Image 1 (cartoon, rainbow, N blue to C red):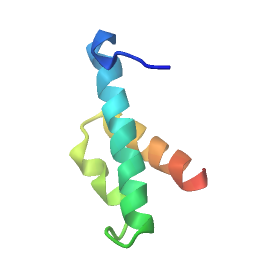
Image 2 (cartoon, rainbow, N blue to C red):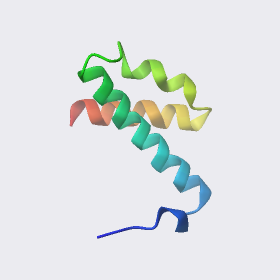
Image 3 (spheres, rainbow, N blue to C red):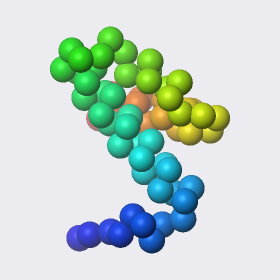
Image 4 (cartoon, rainbow, N blue to C red):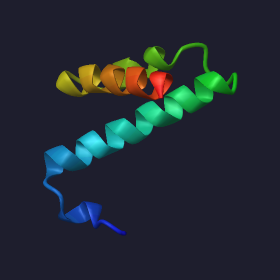
Length: 62
């Protein structure tokens, strides 16, 4: 199954990118490349920052 991310509205594209960043931050934390995945939340503005933290929590649990 494939999805064309370019076909999504801009807001959804941004959320996909934030989710990817959260997954990568958790990976970096687990592999000793980052002290805390939450420390990267400041790279995302406003609502996307909260969404990033939500996704970090999801990936840490999962």
